[in-house]
Image (cartoon, rainbow, N blue to C red):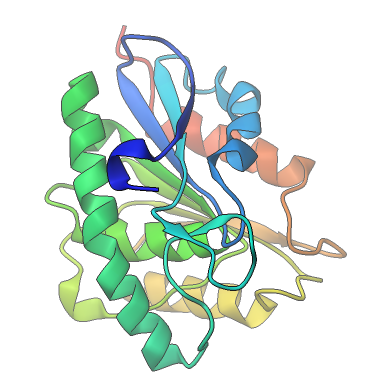
Length: 215
């Protein structure tokens, strides 16, 4: 699958005043997260939700997509991988914003699991500050030297997550706050690697604040 043939699932107005870019987890695809868009659209009625397939086929399964490989989970290797993958995402973001004539200040990046890793790494390194980052069940692959902006961040995590441990949430929260980011969110007892109703409601509240109506 070439970059030009990457599928993008959408929900929202044809002429939006904001974009919410949804980044799925490893082994999934863009169809996975777009189901959340109808649950959030009332909170940001002018926003178009975009959920693209990641650019690479999953290298650990015969199906699904990935933003980068997770075969080697050494922290330094993961940092190299997300650094390699970020320019492709940044180029895609620039293309979407130009297509819909939306500014960076009206963009929210939402990610789940590996998608959260991408969103948390890429957002501070974009040419202009975005409206916010919503990171579910993810991790911060941190390289503070490249951060140019500090958008508001929502961190949501299940306390029973056996895929991305709760310690990743704690590290992300502490590190971002220590570096001047405004961090909100919560952890949910008993929740595994997923998004529950409380997480959906927190996302709606975050979007309403990050993307208020322009008209």
